[in-house]
Image (cartoon, rainbow, N blue to C red):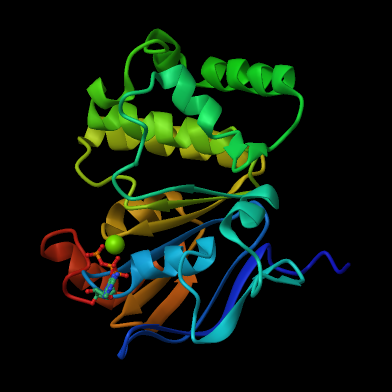
Length: 251
Ligand SMILES: Nc1ncnc2c1ncn2[C@@H]1O[C@H](COP(=O)(O)OP(=O)(O)OP(=O)(O)O)[C@@H](O)[C@H]1O
Ligand SMILES: [Mg+2]
């Protein structure tokens, strides 16, 4: 297999909700070990892109590829088995389960654990808790009682439990204080250094481009810009958006 094939690629994706078209010929890719961000204003189709990658919404045209494998007929659990993980918008933790139990759920894909060896899963959890010492302190606490930042940390740790090659995150900084954004970004950087790729959906271009290697800008379902993070940081259209609210509303 050629090694220059992207880890994930979306090719000519058209997506619809009923008669309403959301994506128009979307092409993007994430290489092994890369951090890629998808920027864009409200309702531009960012979260829908995540749904397409996860297999929660079938595109009407185009294909999602995992390396050289088409995911056209691949279910969400099977995509997770193959190395995809997600940290959805608003985290979606199991609020009435403890932090420790939530982490275990990350190693579980219906109907079984991703790996049969439960001791190995427990060892993974220990390793992850070493990297997230704050979560070790919260191990027995119900996830629903954690702060927003702590919940985001649990969601990221839970995603790691499936030993993913790519983690998708939707608006990971939404509602977090600058201090927590920094903490989450430090964790993403540390995890990425160990070889895991990230696909980040963000409205806040400034924050996303601090972290990402490369980015795409989506506007009403069309990609209007793409490039390295430094190209995008220096692009006038992105800079103009910064001068306002720090959001992508101007794009
Ligand atoms: N389940 C759905 N049924 C019908 N329309 C939908 C559905 N989900 C999203 N849409 C519409 O599709 C468009 C794209 O939505 P999407 O959630 O992908 O945007 P987004 O870029 O993530 O926006 P935001 O920044 O607000 O999160 C919007 O116009 C939205 O109203
Ligand atoms: Mg969204």
